[in-house]
Length: 232
Ligand SMILES: [Zn+2]
Image (cartoon, rainbow, N blue to C red; front, side):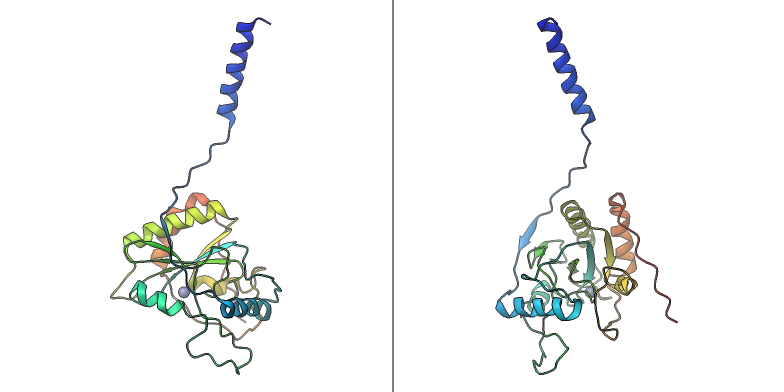
């Protein structure tokens, strides 16, 4: 084989390799501002107890294996007030003497302000209490507002879409749901809540908002939400 010929062959092989390389859509990294809520010994302990008592999961650390993203609205009108609601480790009216009721305060891993700014309140794989039955596998995104007077904004929609793309690229996410859809998972293997009476009625973040985020992230091919269980 002549030198010239082998060089040609080498270049040709390289080009072929480049062409065959699977093309992966590059995900635009959203700007994320870290704004951690208190995660002290108490919150850690209560999170571990929550995983153990409600889900039967014995863990060394209160971490989650993300499989799902849950979108919410806060109803609370400002970022500062919403942050203050999540910041304390225990629920405001918690009485440690009441057994079977977890004192762990509610929170979420992300909060999106009305101008679309994205705040990360907890490490992405630390458990937050934001959705009954599924906290062990769900990353929560809260959106400030959501009332008739303060409907979610276009900027929030854009940031939610970016955040969903970013998280789906980073973790093995199967489901994207609105909080109002969480009870559809009651018979699903991911559902671990033991107390059959522990349910709340949710409407957040609204069907319209969910529909828009779903349409914009269609190519991520999330699994369909299970059908609503038929109660006998
Ligand atoms: Zn919610």
